[in-house]
Length: 83
Image (cartoon, rainbow, N blue to C red; front, side, top):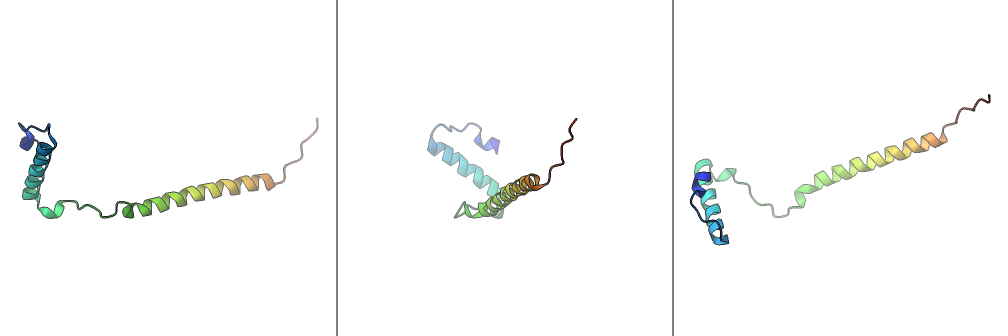
C-alpha cells in the first residue's frame, strides 16, 4: 500500500482523499469487499456491555469494602491486658 502513495502530493485534503480512495480500491481488489469494516450507525450501542460490566465491578468492590468495614467495626475487640 505504501507503493501506491509514493510520489503523491498529500498536502491538500482533496489529494489525501484521492490517495485514500486509491488505497481502499486496491485493498478491495486484493482482499474482496467483505473484509472492509462497516461504520456503525450508533457508536454508543456497542459500548453498553463494557460500561455495564465496569459499573458492576466497581459496585461490587464498593459493597465489599463497606461489608468488610462494617464487620470490622462490629467485631468484639479483645480486652487489653494491663501491665
